[in-house]
Amino acid sequence: MTASSSLRRAGISGSMLILLAGCASDPAGPSTLTALPRALTDREQLVASTGNTFSFDLLRQINLDQGDSNVFISPLSASMALGMTLNGAAGATADEMRRALGFGESPQQSINEGYRGLIGLLLGLDSRTELRVANSIFYRRDFPFEQAFLETGKTYFGAEIRGLDFDAPASLTTINDWVSRSTNAKIPTIIDQIDPRDVMFLINAVYFKGTWRSRFDPRATADAPFHAIGGVSQPMKLMHQTAKLRYFETADLQAVDLHYGNSAFAMTVMLPKAGTDVNALVAALTAESWSEWTGRFAEGEVDLYLPKLRLEYERKMNDDLKALGMRLAFQDGFADFTRLSSRGRELFITYVKQKTFVDIHEEGTEAAAATVVGVGVTSMPQRSIMRVDRPFVFAIRERFSGTILFIGKIVRMPVNAS
Image (cartoon, rainbow, N blue to C red; front, side, top):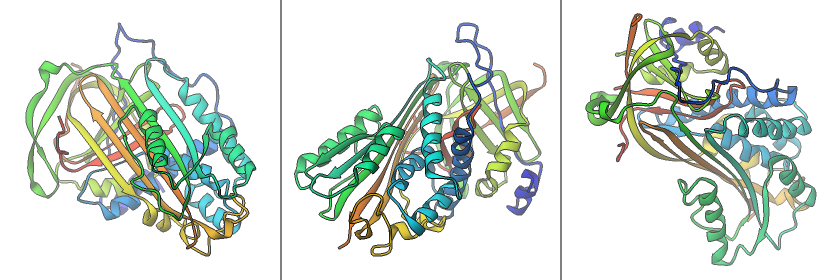
């Protein structure tokens, strides 16, 4: 299915989408990266491509429940936390998890090697942009876990492995301190308590800090109204710059890529034209339409207005993942985690929870995410004007592998947005 037909099915005309993939040259900045330093291996390509499919599947599913709310998630963080957990699943439980993550019938070894290779590549792409990806497995020290599972987490995900006394109050502090350190204190806590049934927490943390290649002048930032969903007008700080950017426009949509550092990473902003429903755009987003749209950018001079905002978001993803086909893993008495423990038939995923943070300002962007999987035991040229003053979708991505680090939707200005 083409992007245009996807949009029409979602109630958006085929000429609606505009992606801006841009980067005005910065004479004082780093040289521009134009390609990956090496080709992706087949296994890295597997994780990158299936990761984007999972990204849009998860965003669309969450948006069904939060059409009138802001959404900001890290599909990469959720995928890695669940990818670690997948190594402990067996039988139909593993099959469902693989399919929900987009891996189909791919061998586990290929999946593990793909995660390790892709993350290693992403971390070394841009010395001017800070990207951290950290994993950990905290487990109840007196519960019998398979050593092979723990070693796999360490070998392929670089996970910190720690056995703790889950009955001691200090264990909660230890786990949350790890998350805070791994996200530069942007996600200070990820779990509120340790239940007597909890036997393991598998956690991924992602932290991103990038400086725009073409920065916004703070003196150009001005007060302006944001036309929120439902017709409500809200105050915001609106940044402004005019620059040569990679830009795409149709009758229904505008889009732009604002590059960071050496241009390996970018923020892609997609703005439906006035009168077009942002939720229809979200419904039309697929890996295929995304690839088509991001391939249609062309450089042009853009008069860009972008909100300055700061957002914190939290989501328990159990129901979303079940809707994507991952059901058995959450079912007490039916889940099969026998590769995790000799008592694996007694184990199940109690929850998958993610917390995120994003701060978009004149200098650049800071974003963080933490995902926890809890395992429990039974019991001048022509100028285009883009004014982002209404609901929009945005993503932070690595341009060459296509990996989406964060993706979200803004329908109203969050409290303390400036």
